[in-house]
Image (cartoon, rainbow, N blue to C red; front, side, top):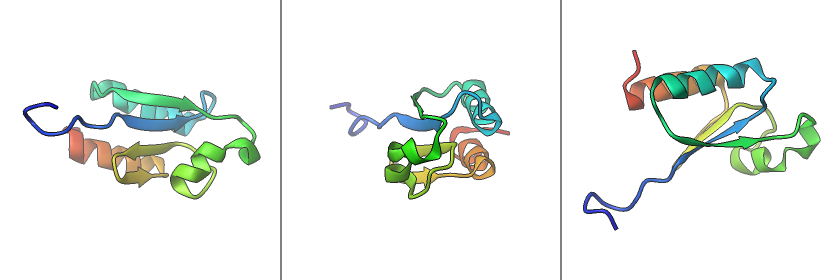
Length: 87
């Protein structure tokens, strides 16, 4: 265990490569230098069981940061900027 407390869980981004909203989130994460686990989801909504388990719906992007679950790109950007030092 770290002297600074338990290790932090890595953020997870439920992502679809062809999704422009997901691209915005990936770019912002990179700009902020944040590490995250990228979970690529299938294009077909009915196959996105992991997304539904995480957020209760099937749309992406979804960002999970510990107990915080966000499923709107504007909310995700605002959260990342406020928590991790964005502009």
